[in-house]
Length: 267
Image 1: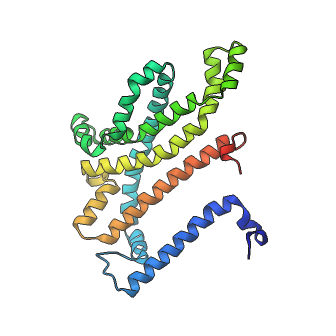
Image 2: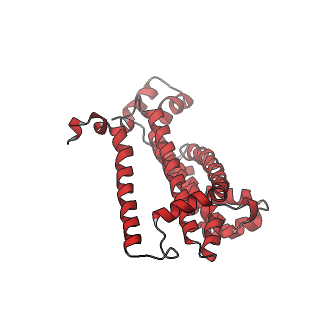
Image 3: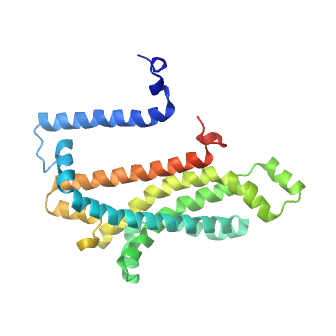
């Protein structure tokens, strides 16, 4: 039966959701069958059923840790967006400013957060703030680079039209450069949201914070020490689902903002 006979499946929005779910269900089924058929010990590779039971049994513990990690992720993401956009606006004011400062933005991107996280944790007394700073350093570069690229990628004909009509620099920025930069900006948000989560988890690994303020990284470490592999996988599943959710929210926000006028979010 083709998609033409099933109008629902011909809907691109349904395809974007149904196709990944179908592939995921097939892969989980194969995983479950192999674990049962080969009698794989649970302490090596737990089956999806084992992971599901662990998610239910340890749900309160893991969800509490998820909230800690998510809080750090969202705070660092918002901080990365604000600082990244401000830096991008500064960079596009002058090619000299961009050439002088942009290499330092690249330096933030290529420096491993694992190498600098211990220093930040030592310098910043508040653990949560230190983790937010570490995650922000990981997430900020895509916002800066994509926003700068978008502000620079202005149609020359439209720019000349604004100059011909003697538009001020402020009018050109608000009515031409910012709308032109929005697709690039939202592309940066999609990348930065995932990087903020990665930065938060890596920073938690380095900090090793426990107790009531423990994030999912701490639960992964503890599960590894205790050889509780199903809980380790369950924590990884929550991290992965959180990353997918963040990306989906950014994609939906981009479609909501650009869908009615920009080609990249139509169809």
